[in-house]
Image 1 (cartoon, rainbow, N blue to C red):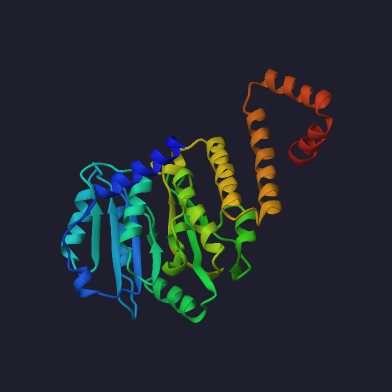
Image 2: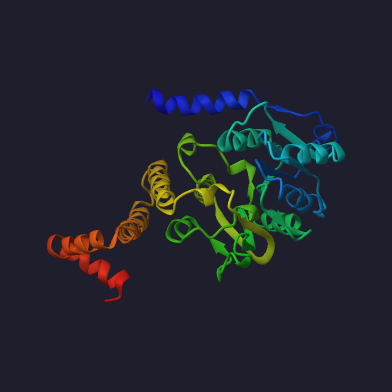
Length: 322
C-alpha cells in the first residue's frame, strides 16, 4: 500500500513544484469555451507546427491554449517561450525547473483548465483544419448526450515517409463496448471532451496509455461522436514514447489497464473485457513463441501438440493457417 501511495505522492510533489509563466489570458479570456492542452518534451522538430495548428483556429467563441513544457533541452523550451511572449492573450505555459515526466506534466495542465470543453494536441502532432474546434464544439453543443467528439486523421510514419488514414469507420456514434472490443481507433489529437464529466481517477496513476484510459473513462459518461473528416495528423516518430516501447511490453501494460478499468467499473463490462484480454493474451503468447530461436520454437510446438492439444489446435487454426 505504501508503494502505491508513494506514486501518487511523487506526482503531486512534481505538480506542486510547477508554476505558470506570466500572461494575460485569465484577464483577457475570463470564460474560455475551450481549453486546448499540449504536453511537450524534446519536440524541437515538431512543436512549431503543433502551435501554429492551434493558433490558426477560427471560432465564434474564446479559447485558451495551455502548454505543459517539460524542461526540454533540445530547443523546444525556447520555441514555446517565444510563442508565449508573442501571444500572451492566448497561451499559458506551465513548467518547472526540472523534468517532471509525462504523467505530472499532463496532470498539471489538466488542473489549470477553465474551459467548458477540453481539446488535446500533443507536441509532436498537429491540426490541419482551421475550423476543427468549431465543428466539434457545434456537435457537442447540439448533443448533450455526447461526452466526447473525435474525427478522422492521417497517421504518418516519419522514418518510412508514408501515411494513411487513421480511422476506417462507418459508425458516427461509439460507446464503451466499442472501445473495449476494437483496437485503438481514436487519434488522441482529435479529441474534444466535456470538462464537466471528467474526473481524474487514482487508478490512472498506475497505467501506461493515459489517452486510452481517458477515452474509456469518458465513454462511461456518455456516447462518443465521430466526424468523418481528416482534420489533424498523428505522427509516429522514433523519439515518441510508443516507438520506444517493445510491442510485447505495450500489450502487457494494456492488459493491465483493462484490468484496472474492469475493477473501476465494478465489472459491469466483465464479459467483454475478459474476451478482449484473452484475445490479446493469445496474440501475445504466439508472438513470444515465434520470437524464439527456431529449435526452441519446434520444441514448444511439440509441447503444445502433446500436452495442450486444445491450445495447439486453436493456435494452428487462428495463426498458422494449417
